[in-house]
Image 1: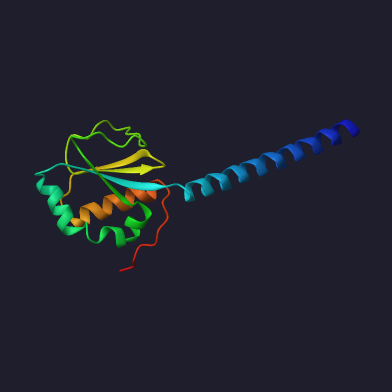
Image 2: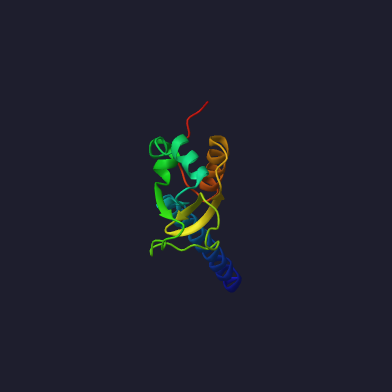
Length: 140
């Protein structure tokens, strides 16, 4: 009885330790995700009509939006070297504009092209939420 009781207590202690480790890991993952730094890289080029549309439609308001605060915009020319502090996982963009969502400097999502405000905001919102960004969206 002593050996069995001892094993049962050890298993219970082990399970409690596993639960604590799992809870700690989840909490750390949530905290790390909350502390993640997001940036939105806009790849553009001179003469790009759709880049101009985005610039006219959204550039003035983007930094003031919840999404713009969660993922500040960084611009890069398609034909120039990309910043050294980023990792592009989806290959070099071929079209402009291409919006690359970076999390801690690593590509986590990509939006190719710009058709309209609704198209852009919907896809950006999806990408941000999928990758754990937290921000307050205005309610309609």
